[in-house]
Length: 284
Image 1: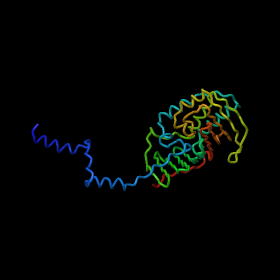
Image 2: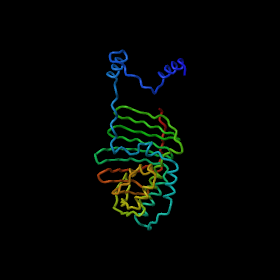
Image 3: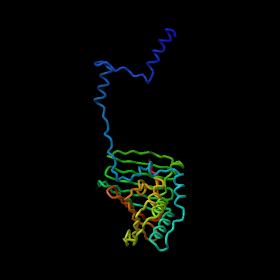
Image 4: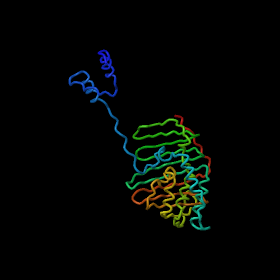
């Protein structure tokens, strides 16, 4: 290597982005400029963590699921579930099947955790389109899906984040809510002890209350479902002590309550079955 080569290599080495620069000498102009910037720079405080009650569906990670997983779930729950005609299990199965066939509806979900955290999620479903609005003490999450595109807006501590228009791929389509309801209830009914507990008026309808005491078999059936379907009902972690209560009127599910002692309770009301539900894309 010649002396000229050595000089060229030295010049190039100063351009190497992986080469650490020597620290500026105290009192130098560069030292003073860096110190001034560090002392005057404003750093935004991190947003506080969401309460546990905020629907575990952080929308993309929990509700968005692969098409293959949904197909497998449908196949897994399509088998014949033996129930005795006129039994409590038969009534719940009929309602689950009919609810799974609904093409549009609205829901309200009230979630409370053991620490007192509370969130409310209102949802509208029309075919493959949907709108979810979740509110808690921290802020609001809004997810809209129209025509295969998704928009997500978050407002926390007065700050708003917009995801913009995002195309959903076949691998990231949403787990359909009505079908997920059927799959989850079918799985929960596997070997479950189903009790009829009386009636309650819900939105003007007399609804019959059923309780499903889960067994190892039903918990295993639930665990086999995609997380995205279970997450609609806070069952993505099927706790051993979880109970599932269902209210039925007109052979349709009116309410589902999932309760895990010392952890959380989620109450979902179903209404406006097959009613006209119009969901429009955000303008920005």
